[in-house]
Length: 200
Image (cartoon, rainbow, N blue to C red; front, side, top):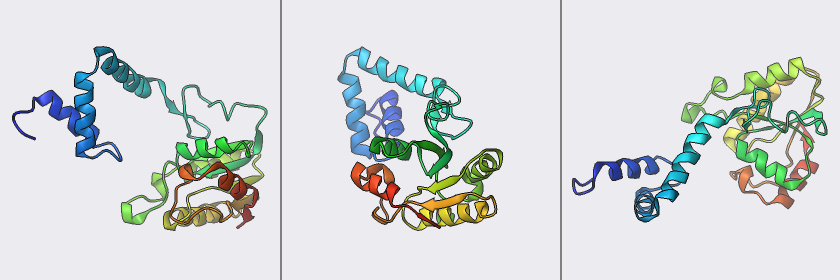
């Protein structure tokens, strides 16, 4: 950055640039917007960032993002506690919830196995899923990882780990586009994929 730009401005541009989907131009626009905006806008952003880190945690059961532990989904007695949908990210939980077609529980892996990106089986929450199945009364695991190389590799590994645990293992139907992310799929397609899941 140029010496003509004050250091606090440079630092914020660099911080925004590290966010996914935010390039240098967008980072600069955001920074200069905040400079011109009323102080309360920056203060609300600052408070929201602080609260995000201080008030949220991962549910100790499903590893979804929550304020209270266990999360509202895991602690809801109206949900089917015998069925667990395994997803890659918290945004996938939101996508499935939007369909209104699923009343079971979730398990968030926080990624998918991807040796090319240096993500191995110990970097995602598969061990915790196996322990959860061993402890509980789970009857079905729905593998809802994203279609594609990483999602398929993760699904196969989970199937291998749970094969001897006496649970039914299903995978979302292939109505989903290969290479797509579940969070971007429309509710009708995702609902049909849930209904048309098949056993592995």
